[in-house]
Amino acid sequence: MRDPDNIRAVKALGIDLMGLIFWPKSPRYVSSIPVHAGIIPDEAEEEIVKTINSGCKHVGVFVDEMPQTVITHAYNYHLDYIQLHGNESPTYIDNLKRTLIPDILPDVKIIKALSIREADDVKRWQQYDGYADLLLFDTKCKCVGGSGEQFDWSVLDHYDGNIPFILSGGIGPDDTQRIKDYHHPMCIGIDLNSRFEDEPALKNVKKLDDFIKKIRTNE
Image (cartoon, rainbow, N blue to C red):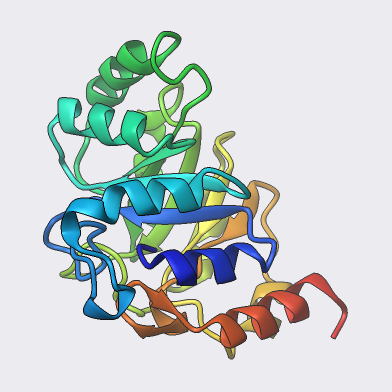
């Protein structure tokens, strides 16, 4: 998310987490302010920070970024979670947490994204035991997330860890029943992204609203 009006509209749906992409190669990169936002780049950060200062919790997404850059963005945007979507090591996470906690962001949590295609991919969780607070299982693809592609969720039956996870990977408006039928004791939420967009970083509020209502009811 990066458009202030879109941010406010999506927040009003009662979501739990909102993502801000800080990977420069992403079409959803926060600093790539779209023309329709009506904000000049120098004012963008201030406007977004003002918009996200209330409501749901906020996740900053980074890909193999320099730790100091992560720390700067985490502080400036008051992030609640830092999602690492690259090849960050347990040592990287440990150093990041030691720097941020308790002096800078005492309550910040780390989400480690793992790209999944087969059962062996799931086993990578073990190296992050004791380091990541949450995992995010996404589709393994040539890009870094946001592909809109799904993976076979049944491979997550092999996940026997104690770190809660978020289910990701091409979840779209037609997947309500598939979500309701999916059960894993450590799955605590789902990630909605590219298949709910009118364009990168601009979510279709009606599609999200309809989907969320169906998921949260017996409809």
